[in-house]
Amino acid sequence: EKGYILNYKFVEDGPQGSIKVALKYDPQTKANAIKCLKRVSTPGLRKYTGYKEMPRVINGLGIAILSTSKGVMTNKEAADLKIGGEVLCYVY
Image 1 (cartoon, one colour):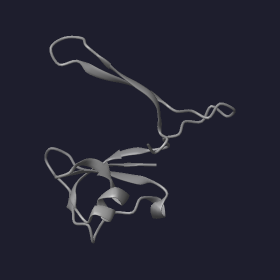
Image 2: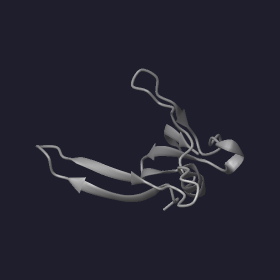
Image 3: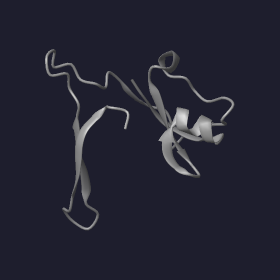
Image 4: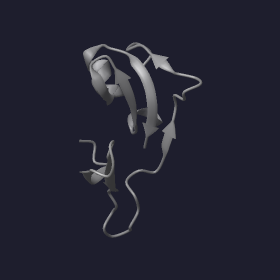
């Protein structure tokens, strides 16, 4: 939805399977769409946020991915629904 992924497919290899992701690149300059992917929450230290203290990534140009009670969504979608959750990563 946000324009960072070109294509994806589910691969059935074993009992659990996996997901193959193709990232989007600029056709002329061959620059990738994702400049940085920063993990925020770790198993040892979880980071939670409320909808009033929602993180802004690069002054609103990037997105933060949250795990909420309504599912995985971006910081803008969670702020519109007025729900908080665990901050998984920043993408820009």
